[in-house]
Image 1 (cartoon, rainbow, N blue to C red):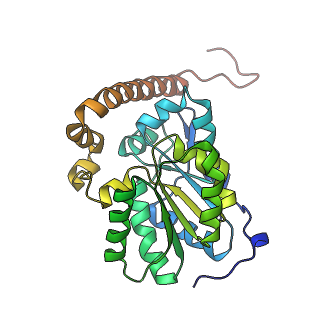
Image 2 (image 1 turned 60 degrees about the vertical axis):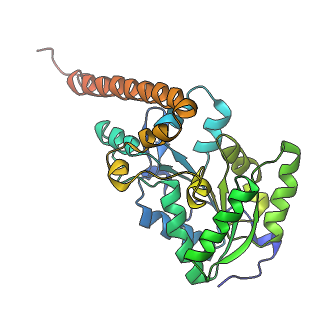
Image 3 (image 1 turned 180 degrees about the vertical axis):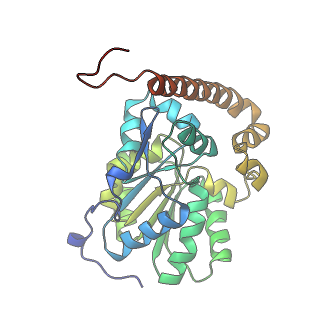
Amino acid sequence: MTRDVPDSDRTRGGAGGRRPGDRREFLGVHLDPLTIDETVAACVKAVEERSPVTIGVLNAAKIVRLRGDADLRGAVLDCDLVLADGQSVVWASRLLRAPLPERVAGIDLMLALLPEAERRGDRVFFFGARAEVLERTVAEVRRRFPGLVVAGSRHGYFSTAEAPAIADEIREARTDLLFIGVSSPMKELFIRDWAARTGAYVAHGVGGTFDVLAGEVRRAPVWWQRHGLEWLYRVIQEPLRLGPRYFTTNFTFVALVGLAAVRENLRGIVRPRPPGAKSP
């Protein structure tokens, strides 16, 4: 159940038991090899132990974007947990011999955490989207999880100067789990700069999840998700806005994975001889 926690107890406390040595590294990033069930368990532990965790997610497009955006790169990779929010990232990890167990999509993680929060009596805050979309999102969440304690909600349109007051509003609501439904890089930068001030034990950027729950955007059917084609389904819905971005970043991602695979194979063929070994 939810507890009244003194401000002094709401301090950043690590990654809910994650061991940094377990991380997988490839394409210049690192990810935590967790299943969705393991991630939910880590978040529950964070609330129970009052040891806050921040969650970052990476898909193919964002991995490409990180290469040219130092602020976004730092904000994502400094999170306590960094998860694969893209089937192509999981496939690439296996090809590059740094295997991840499964995709942990932001929307799936949120929808797995909400019933746990309902069961435990944890307080949830929704921050993001347009006011009318947010209202429909909260209504849909209440419909699915009638016992959920909604600590509060706030639309996602704000200036940098407003961020401290928003963090204080979230803190005053005694938030346990914070879901941030704003676009990149705003959600990552808010988590980096203000997650500690919010006092939330779990801060998770969920991107366009609110739009899906509110019925603004249709999520790809399961077959498309399993075959790594969710991005294409989104492009079909919004071709002018998303088409150029996704086709460019996906082509770059495939090229990066291909080059990395070639280098990996070459390292396996050409290995330095140990000291003192005789030439053949």
